[in-house]
Length: 446
Ligand SMILES: [Zn+2]
Image (cartoon, rainbow, N blue to C red; front, side, top):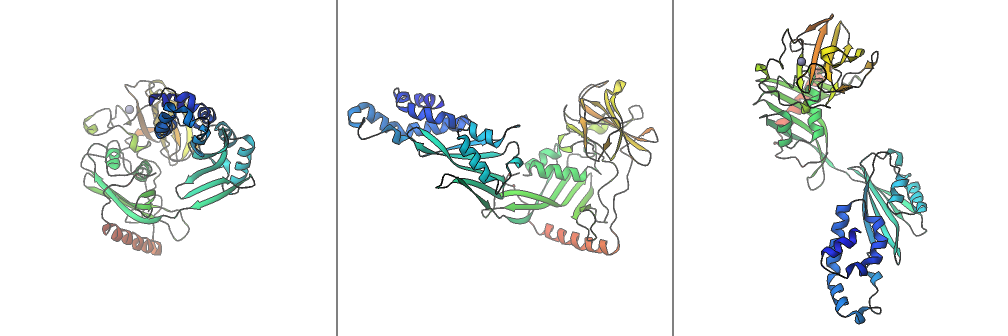
């Protein structure tokens, strides 16, 4: 149907008749990506137009003798499919037009290099069908890239069975430096500087222990990061890796962290220049800082700052934005709580508790143990609330305290020889950092 429509669009009236064998054999193959299929069909039609014109003006000279319309069928047809939730590879291949026996043989071959059960939703698979006889096609090749470095191909061999082959691409890794000044939001500034979403959310995660992204980030503040960039020989970014140095300057105060793996087998983490881990008992921003609606000017906005009447702080974000447990603990309450609407309270150690209000969705049950950063529900506007936001409270011995004022001790402090080793590593990173020109614009690539 797509082919007929596209060919008619080129203005060749008789084309649909001429094309019918193509249409019959190819429709089953080309349906998944209609945009691409139409594009291909139009190109084919243009390619064939002179032939068709000649055929229509002198049919006897062409038909049935010298030109068999079957010869115009492409020898190979490419089709891209994507794994949807609930898909099995068998169903996907068969639906795409492969014979069940071919699908089975191809999957068996694939298994030698890649476990089909590890297919993720959204994974693209390129299928090549080869022309079998007059009007049918059979599966020739299936190829997929489980990661940017790796491609697995399964190809039909003479005997009719399939063989898997794996291609590993090696990228060059170097450190890249990106930074900028915040005008309206860290998210926008980060994207403008060329950061991808995964780098940006990792950067924000590193600072979420110390920075209240709603209240503490102001226009003119700066951010800078030094991270691993994997690029191909042409210099194109194929993948971004670990952030080695992360820095923010907030109202003139610099926060600077270095990734470090202690030599004593302790957890790899981010550490301040003084050797303190960033990890704290509670997050200051218990929500993805990239998804906050701009907090600028909130110091003058009574509802967004802490007040005795209000007893908490608010984070403005869209309904549905995931809320994270500020710290490890046990859920003391999860349910409706009057003006607070849908509400979760978590009990942490040392007499501390945190509470989350106006949620649209509760993701935990009373009595449940939660990890720091675990998603416990979503932002909403339930209860006495004028718009979607997270109302967040910190309690000490049952009383609300000002969360903007509490400072929690850091997780680990590097000392002695371990600190000396860390200092050498961080100074080395700084030196490398200063010697690296700022990357103007990172080629996008997750
Ligand atoms: Zn509030």
